[in-house]
Image: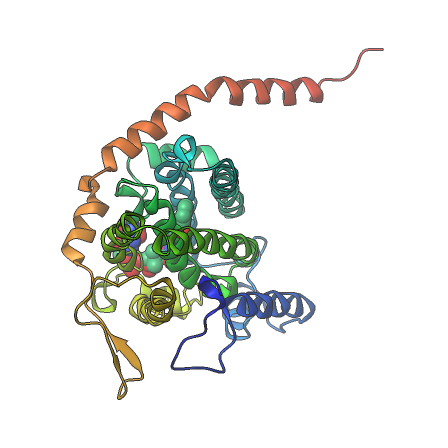
Length: 347
Ligand code: BYC
């Protein structure tokens, strides 16, 4: 049994995460076949959102809706691209050829996710280049989680299990986002993300059932990645500036705290199968609430990391800038080739 095959203990009949992705895909196709009667403009936009239809690039949308989507999709795309770094750190040191090939494929997938999301953001009237510039100038964010170091091979497992696990819990509801291009990108991404989580879970399972030293390495990785993974869901609802409006627009479907709770409830039985301990002495089932009680991450630390002062922020940005400069000749060559193909052919 693997990571996301588990349902939540409190809702045994609830479909698995991949079933939810399949449902969202069916709804998306059905939505394309329905039409909404309205006069256009703001009323049309509101009617589409109320009817759970998708807003498409050609539709009128409020400026705030467009800006929120550009902010979130760009931040999401940047996270995928910067997120390649901590795991790429282990490609040359993967313990077997098979593990190396799997990790290579996974890191390559993250690049693909970034590209789907940049392409999705471009439908809102911004260019990919302008988004890169904002990232490189430190004016747009990326997920806090990628500012932590990967110290051992077990960290690759912990990233897959916890970081990709948190990403899926956050992203499955985004498959139902009201903006069509984002929802469509998320469906594809979630399917791949599910494989990523399984590969991490399998690495940890192997280590946890190996020698005492291997098990200790797996536990150490889980100890270090648990709270940063909880912080991925963002500040608590009381401090979340965008949630209320984003939920009204059906960009976000659940609050930061609701998703964090869902993630904790999903991880508890998975940790039991792994034979590893979640590093939270307060973690216990609360029968009255129907959820696990748990210790929240240090949100002060989250803010420090978001502001650029986490353990690896400078290293990550320096590496990204260097990679962007090193890739300049590829972009120039591709642009020159495209221009050449546009020239008329002189017979
Ligand atoms: N890190 O009002 P709030 C992956 C910011 S990639 C940094 O709650 P919102 C993977 C937030 O932007 C995973 N910043 O915001 C890749 C806002 O600041 P601004 C990435 C954070 O948007 C490779 C402020 O705090 N996933 O899985 O309603 C390998 C207030 O927050 C964070 C996505 O990007 C954070 N953790 O909700 C492996 C998913 N949290 O913009 C795996 C899409 C908050 O006002 N994004 N902030 O300056 C979302 O779902 C939402 O944007 C969030 C935040 C839940 C993250």
